[in-house]
Image (cartoon, rainbow, N blue to C red; front, side):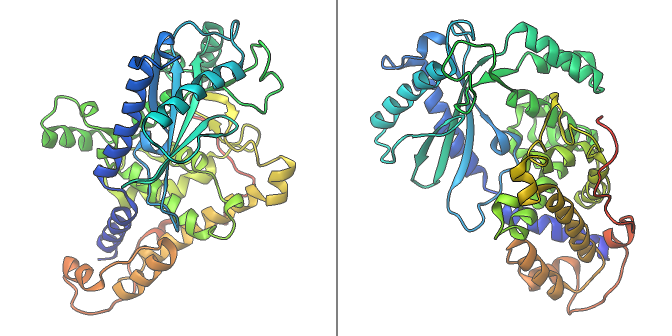
Length: 404
């Protein structure tokens, strides 16, 4: 019975922290309107450079969760000017100011009250309507052929098949960052990013669940699941990432600076996932494997679409050591294993609901849960689940395994 309960509890947690399709649709309508304005409005100074605006981060991956003790969302965007601007004829500062001027004109025309805010890598536009969110727009240009070739070779060396590595490398971009010494001068030294490529990689990890995707296509009456918006896939991997991020949020509620960043959780979860079709099996696989995928040497958590980039690069910095970032990652992983082990080893619905409230901030209806699994009262303790299956050895705080 406990396996059934675990599946139900994970499903209930996922549903409680997910956002409705309407929220995704509202956010997507916002950035599509911005993209259209930049491309077509006579006031747009960017129009002649063929702007392409696209979502990145959790909105693109379908792993957004309801804000914890906040009432706003972060929608991360890239604004890629696809032609006419290169690192040889523009500085990062010039590119950022160009996009900023257009965003300010857009803000005024759309009567957005909050002032446009300049951040290190992006411009922040704050909407306050039925869905309050920060629209963070990163100015960028396509990466040059030389860097794309380097990225392709890095991915191939790390184990990515050549065709996919080439496809993903073509999506790489150069982004602005006012902390770089070269920010105000013509220079080849721009930061490399590839949010579209990362999203493609994450999708390949989800698509390992082949039978699940075949079933999804049939239900949606489409030839390929790619025709369905990614946020509607709701795969076990997406659900697990959402649940793990909320567990992190609660655990580090009073230590936001010290929490494991979403890029690390998402990447390690995706690499651990092997196409499990049941959410409880996916969570078991992820919690069991993700610690072994942290390398002992730098890069500790490589970016899969740029393996030289380390998502854990702040761990060894002075600030990172002061905040004990690496130690806190391992503490979080160990706590997650313990907590999910508890969920899978008890049949006491009342007790489990209280744990869910404590660890995930989610209110579950105990009576409804009991009806779903045919229990009329509280309660049997026992059963085999994550607590029994997760290796009993302590988490290896030095990391281990390899990239692949």
